[in-house]
Image (tube, rainbow, N blue to C red; front, side, top):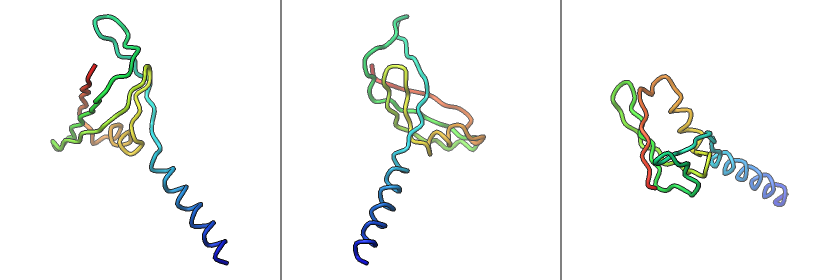
Amino acid sequence: MKLILFILTSIFLTIKVAAQDRKEKINLIISVDDKIVVGAVSNIKILSITETGDRKEISADYYPGCLSIPMEDYLFLTSDATDSVAVSLTY
């Protein structure tokens, strides 16, 4: 009985952790001085401003051709509440 309880708890926790790691991948190509950036870009921040003036800063990962953000933040950015978005990065 303890083994079954342990297995069920392990499966539940694995599913819970996997759901939190889910990220949305967005096709994005960054160019600097008319040259496509082929190396990794660091310190990417997305600043979102809502219709009410609230600000939310989102951290993102970038690999050539792909911007990756948590699914929860992606849903926030694509919601009707988001009025504008700005991206800052270190190259």
